[in-house]
Image (cartoon, rainbow, N blue to C red; front, side, top):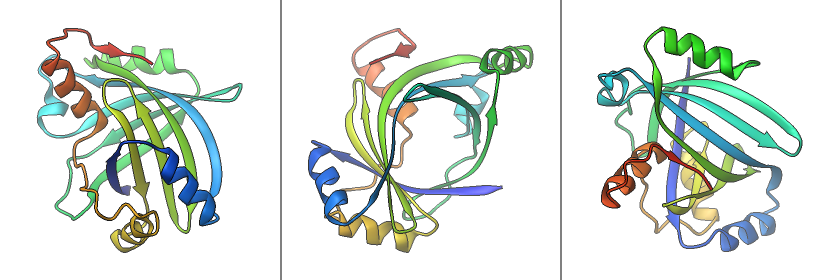
Length: 185
């Protein structure tokens, strides 16, 4: 099992960070459109336990991939850290039907545009989400390496956001008094 360690930072614009990545010689990896489907049972058991089950559809150019991901509860750490198990799947509809037969239904769905870069041992994702705006996520093998990349990108003054995008979108939908469960670009 793997641990996901990341810093999530809210930014006004992604342009400055992208310029800085280029200046630092970061490697551009991909531009993606991700559609995330979060699943839970009728009692919201996973959500209440700070866990999640996500089916993700990624469009990259003309290609499409699907991943099923489980994330455990957040651990105490200066960065967002949690257990993560991820598998690539070939047939998203069959996977969703299987999960439905086990009692898991779509609780929330949303899209995001993501541009992925590699800087050192870290992956830097530049994300644009509906209702929320722009974010930079830095994922790496250790807190020290993430902090170093955050400093090199001149983002060290920004606070880390511990909440998932799903939780942030849920909060925003409640603030807007919206009942919809799907938020697309």
